[in-house]
Length: 357
Image (cartoon, rainbow, N blue to C red):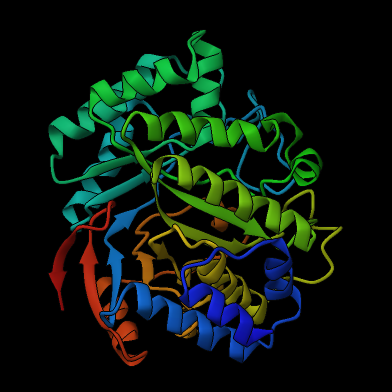
């Protein structure tokens, strides 16, 4: 079957769910990786692997959504709950900018006490004080929270953020875009349509965003295909996604911990990347997550269809809350990409080239 898939993909024909199910469950891993790499180079001929200098701070851990997979959040009034003021967040942006960051991915819990102006001020002041930093702020579920608290529509909230200077959204909070999975692990977030609505409205307004997936918990292959079909269909509408970014679930200190008997390893990750490169024919980039999967797995991922290394993540707290910590610097990123046989290239949030190493 690998040859029929190869012929279909290289001819520019779209794979269907039967193909996708085979990629996720039955395709020989090394052959799958080789085909994904062939398709990667057919679409992106250069041996360049991009990365971004970025940081991922948080503005609050207060959240009312009670996701089963999250070890980071605290309920309102909890003794460990905290929320930063605008100036405190901007201090974190300043630290990132001083280290050369061009992107700050800011996210937090769903805090019902924060007004719309708080979010707008964060964007406006980041743009004003740090013109070299892209405010890659607020996941879809945070945008939904802002809309509920403010009484505005999703579109109105996005318009206010755009007026303040925001142009991109992170793709976090997707988990697996399956009705069954979302009901099980994040029932208060709503179904897949909730996440898709925010990104659809953002793309209509000229925002670009990423599409993420957190797998390795309660999903089946068909749930994963629901996710891939949903983001592929939305990409057909507006072309607003820059990259697909999957990572495996880290169960430490979460409510799901007692149900997860086996953590997904590198083979499952490499299969996911390669399958995505073939199935998501309208996505320009597939990102290797050195952070969640390990640096060596990240290097191997560059031979399984991934063309991007992600970022430096100078600050990160969500995985840290699940006892998973991984750090890296620009020099090490450059070295690891070169060791893997590729040319390191620094990019912006929207994949504009800043520097070739």
